[in-house]
Image (cartoon, rainbow, N blue to C red):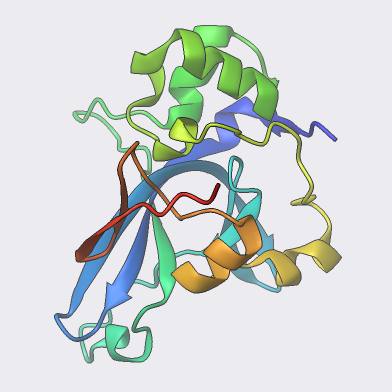
Amino acid sequence: MNKLYKTLDIYTAWLVEVDSQYNSLGGIKNIIGIKVTHNREQLFYSILDDCFFHILPQNDPTGDIRKDLHRKLFVQIYEYQKPPYEFKTFGMKLHRYINKDYITKQEIIEIKKNKEYLFGYQSDFSYDLLKTDTTVDYENPLMIDENIIDTVQKYEEKEKRPITYDSTHIYGPNKLKKLNKKS
């Protein structure tokens, strides 16, 4: 299945892991996706990962919300900012480039091959066998719960690949380890 995505609804986001020991966020990778509301909660559907992530809760000035979220995955969405800032969402830039209201995952991948600058660095494009089909319907509430990823381990089990890498290393929060390729 090759699902259509509304171009202007596509965002980039920063996938992070909460580290309560250091009260910090460990950045993992930038991802491309759309916002989805499920059971009155905002989630982020990652188009290339074909799964959902929770959106990082806003900081509570009266307490430390991160203490209960240790080693959990979240996204921070790169949102549009009003002038005088020049930042536009990924979907705005993409729509301006392709002048189409809807796009497929396959089309996004093809554009990435030809127009590196349009996307910035997205480690998911480095995988040798990038999935071009969509197996999770982000509009089907029955598929959402079973495809929410909240830890690195759950990601790697579901996706059957490291969460992110370059040709020699896997990157993750506060660590760098050698990539063990299976033959």
